[in-house]
Length: 288
Image (cartoon, rainbow, N blue to C red; front, top):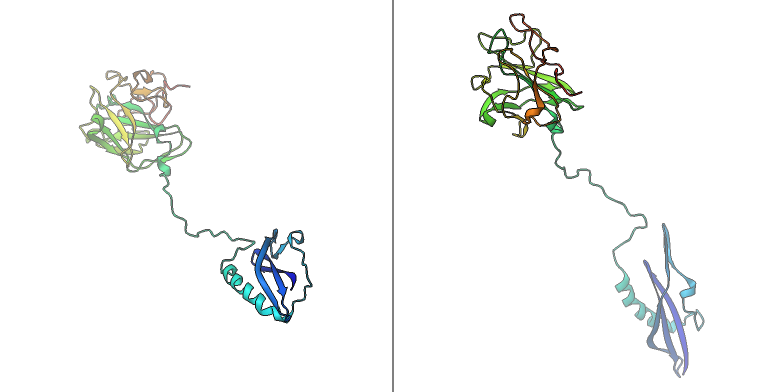
């Protein structure tokens, strides 16, 4: 019998198979295959929108005429049919894959913008001794040295380290601005008559005791923002306020407080007397 090799290339998707079949011609003229004796997978080149191709350099050169005798067709079909079944797949790889982005992404927790840089809001000045006109005309000033206004709604000032509520706050403290809180009583309805307070109230705990109070400034989420453990300065006899020197230093540091210097004062009490302090203004002893 005379032997021949038939090279068959078959491409499906990204895979191209090169089959080398050996046939022997029998005496009666029919071709008989001895089976697959070799295979080669060529280089695959992929271009967007272009079917995969096989590098000619990787193909096995045919050793016989590319024309296949009709008598070989059933044999070739029987070889290729199983391969086609195996290689055929519904999976498609797009040359231009699409990235799907959800139109409803999972939300992430975002901090309350009103509680950013809250440590900058401080208890800045305390008129714990009242005024010359009334010992009940007590007042507290907050200061915000940040560059953004802060909503104080829901905040609270406590005394006794948080055991007794002095007053609940409402409103906004402006950037680099002040927030004036006044105590009102039947005998002292307006502590500072020519400066409008941001909020007024009766002050729980019977007001601010002359012997000292531990004040805390607390947010609506119960976060302690500032604390002053006692009266580090101020004068009962002169009705001079206790002023903070540096807003960036702790409120519990005694060296960070001084008594109003008597040279810079703003406001008047109900009797027309000058307030020996600086309500809603820069402290007389404030750091430059």
